Length: 83
Picture 1 (cartoon, rainbow, N blue to C red):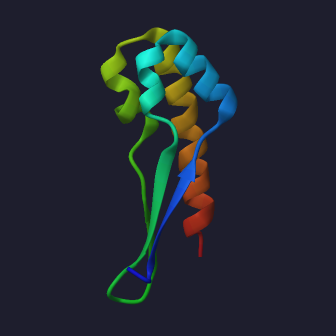
Picture 2: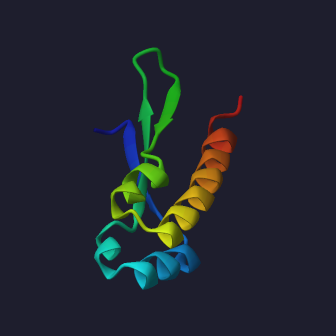
């Protein structure tokens, strides 16, 4: 779709921490932001929260890194959608 884009993002320090805690979690990074044009012409941004993506691993170190990523991603989303 010409009015959509997917940005592939991640933080290498967080990826190292997550993969060190559980190698199986290495299939998750990178994460994605989906930027789209709504029918009314406005842009929108959607993304799954990192804590949701990594929650099934039930590991304290991964949970901590994912919570930090939640804050970072929310900040990016807020800045990207500010008017």
